[in-house]
Amino acid sequence: MSARRFPFRTVFEPFIIKSVEPIRMTTRPEREKIMKDARYNLFRVKSQDVLIDLLTDSGTGAMSSEQWAAIMRGDEAYAGSRSFQRFEAAVKEVFGFEHVIPTHQGRAAERILFSVVCKKGDVVPNNTHFDTTRANIEYQGAIAEDLIIPEGLDPQSLYPFKGNMDVERLEALIKRVGAARIPLCMLTITNNSGGGQPVSMENIKAVKTVLEPHGIPLYFDAARFAENAYFIKLREPGYQDRSVKSIVREMMSYADGCTMSAKKDGLVNIGGFLCTNEDRLARQEKDLLILTEGFPTYGGLAGRDLEAIAVGLREILNEDYLKYRIAEARYLGEHLVEIGYPIVQPPGGHAIYIDAKALLPHLRPLQYPGQSLSIELYLEGGIRTVEIGSVMFGKIDPDTGKETPARMELVRLALPRRVHTQSHIDYVLEVARDVYGRKEQLGGYRIVKQPAFLRHFSAEFEPL
Ligand SMILES: *Cc1c(COP(=O)(O)O)cnc(C)c1O
Image (cartoon, rainbow, N blue to C red; front, side, top):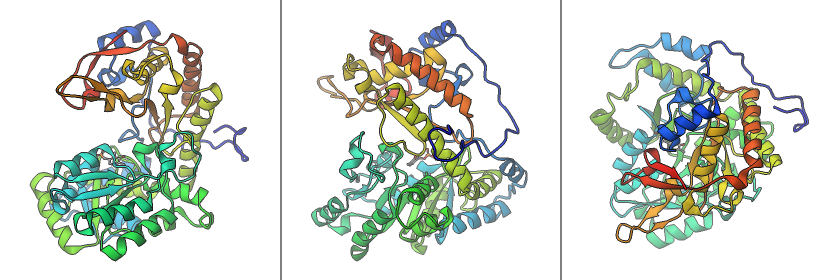
């Protein structure tokens, strides 16, 4: 990205464009009608009505020519396909675990893992549980405990590893509930819910050291494992001369297994897997897999999907790619700060989070400042972002109907992998600058219709 910001030349996209998808241009009056028809909920907007879609980085990446070529090699045999063998070999090469179980996406791996290891009353610690991870643990009647370090909760802290687990709180938790009630401990790399912040190797080792005497296994929620490894290379003393591949292997060497959403650092549009080093566990997990996902050599995926993951897992370790990836997020983040936007610092790997509460102090949390900003970014420039605040996490008391706002009011700009050019990002910044110029005029919203749970996907709004 910009040469000004870096001591080197422009970090440009390390690929050329081989296949394109046209963007259908829209005008502000058209978008005003679209937004109104969608009841001011961006999840209800059709993708052809979006110019730059920053809703999520999950499954939205572009595949490489090698991945498309691999797709043609897909072996669709029901059992023991060559595609599974290539997939398994790639996962073992990159991650190093004994058993590899394919699933249709990350949450399926979570459901199978927690169905096997959790019982009612158990406690599963994590730096910060991703929402589907928490939901799958709670579905088993277990408790999902977040043990992030204090810096991880301070949006302005520039601490380099804000995804780290608070090791003292982990020790205290083990002492309080007893190791028998902790079937495993997780580390989410990078910490998605905490702003895509990395976990250091030192912290991974410290967590392992605490767990080991108690026999508690360590698992990674590995969705963004390569971005995490690259942050270690950039920021942790002693890792500058190591390859990302060897850093990943070292990270994984401290763990007993992982869950993986290949829709992130697998560089594919669908897929996931579950890994373990334990034979008995693997057998139980495969039995459950057959019940809902499919035979253990395809797990709900087509042979061609397994091929694309096998190639994606090797491509993600390319350090020119990772350098560009991190530079893209940093470019967007630093320029938003230059305009005046308060963001969660420092820029993470996959997204930038704007603090809408600080940006729009004239709106109360229950007037949904995050919703207001995300709607204005769409109206002004056709940019789709996502509110991560009281619309998503506000809690309504079932008896009184009173609503408690979320802790933070954020708007996330997630970056799909290998999809946008620098001029797309520059356009986003121009729109953001215009919106910033009239931020005092942005109004609040109220919810006029909502479902009982996960309301952000379908709720209907009205401007105040
Ligand atoms: C996306 C994600 C998941 C869930 O994966 P899906 O493929 O969406 O089911 C789990 N954990 C983290 C950290 C994620 O980002």
